[in-house]
Amino acid sequence: MTLALALPAGRSRPRRARGVLGPVGWTALVLVAAMVLLAALAPWLAPYPVDQQDLLHPYAGPSPAHWLGTDATGRDILSRLLWGARTSLGGPALVVALSLAVGLPTGLLAAWRGGLVDAALARVLDVVFAVPGILIAVLAVAVFEPGLTPAVLALAVAYLPYVARTTRAAARAQRDLPYVEALELQGMGGLRICVRHILPNILGVVLAQVPVAFALALVDLASLSFLGLAVQAPAADWGVLISDTSALLQGHPEQAVYAGLAIVTTVVALTFLGDRLTEGRPVARARKEKR
Image (cartoon, rainbow, N blue to C red; front, top):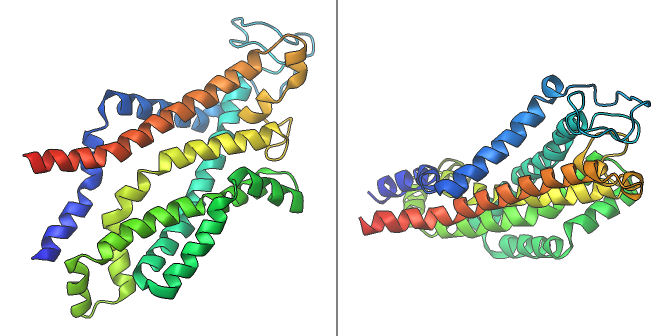
């Protein structure tokens, strides 16, 4: 009876969270979806090839030919913004995916085994958590070479504690529930219990943290690209577009402004979406209990 009550409640949480996003949450979700769609369709939406130069029209203002103008070598800024969205959003997506792929099993293992295993993993996570992610990325780039791959892998390691600690806390709460003891008495193994029952019950809690982690990774990767440690010029990337100091010194900040607005808009939308998903879960439970 306990098992029958616990499992449906855990699996219905994502639907309740979606129901309480509210206008702010839905607006943020639409903005994020629009950014992802623009990045995916960049090869078809960009009016010019990303590296096509027009040396006769450097720093051209907005016009029907170039909606956002051109840069120092006459490259279309709109095209570079659209193509830059692919690395600016794809890099953080890889960071979050890798941290989830490692952090979820790590947190489940720590919660299930407990004792020395839990204590050892917790200490390792605390050490990694204490080091800023961008510092780990800088060290990785120094050891290997500047590029998107070392930066993504380093940030994935840095963001691992966020996922693992959230998973561990949620899984430990599930570990103490009666339905887990009932499953063990029936002879079900720990791996099967974690994968088929505990993980579905905590997945909503963990995934609610993904938008904020994505936003933080976006800012970190843009900062590394700005410093020349991740995506390298002349490749199109929002961080690279902001780093064009020669345009700023010559009084043409348009490219940096457009790329900065793209970063700020995406980060703010992701932050609001993450807040609504996190706050929506207890709100939904409170509403159900009130009814």
